[in-house]
Image 1 (spheres, rainbow, N blue to C red):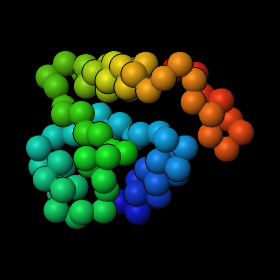
Image 2 (cartoon, rainbow, N blue to C red; image 1 turned 90 degrees about the vertical axis):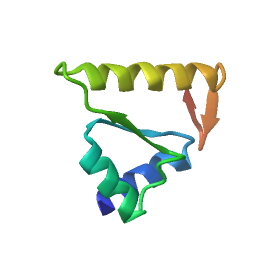
Image 3 (tube, rainbow, N blue to C red; image 1 turned 120 degrees about the vertical axis):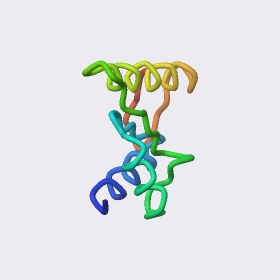
Image 4 (tube, rainbow, N blue to C red; image 1 turned 135 degrees about the vertical axis):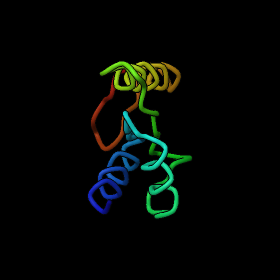
Length: 83
């Protein structure tokens, strides 16, 4: 959990997000109870789906849409990030 929290914090420092795909309800509840991850901010949970790989595809689509809505280019710490 600490590794995920640290990674999410690192991503947030450069205006990024962490998408966790394939998360079942039990794990989602455990993550919420732990309260370490900002599930309403830089960490997004994508529920598990019946088709293998479908939740990861959904996470990629959500992340791509978020990147597209965050502007043409973002520059942070001297690094340009293109959507």
